[in-house]
Image 1 (spheres, one colour):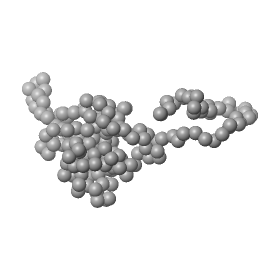
Image 2: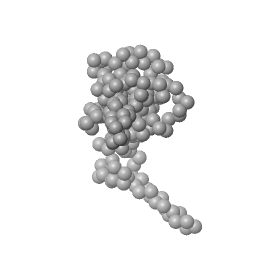
Image 3: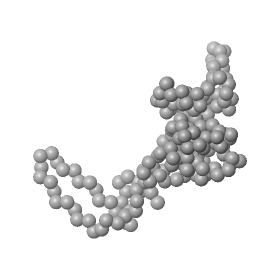
Length: 179
């Protein structure tokens, strides 16, 4: 079970942090009955389908590191047959670099392409060749016809646009799968 902020559950009471008014003496600290309680987690990582259905989730205790993400992906997709065509995640280029450094990219590259969601892609460095070449969510070179489609503007001209809204669930999810 996960606690919401400022939620006090009977089995896990949290003491509120007392704010000391400016230039006032400190109040007496509260005495704790015990120091036992459930662990807290850094984040909950979810894998969702494009329709928004959660396929899997995991709690990451200390960090949303590339190694934790890869371990989660390997647990959810243990075989090549179970892997999706695309995995969209804000840290796709970092996960890809980690996979390559650890020798896992060869097995994943046969089935899956990692892409960065469009919101975070704009904040990634333009000098990051790996990110721009391999994790682009909307390449216009024809390399990912499932991600980019031609559309017609009101004036009759054609333009390229993303086939999927990779930003739609960013508040709730960390990975989006596109198959």
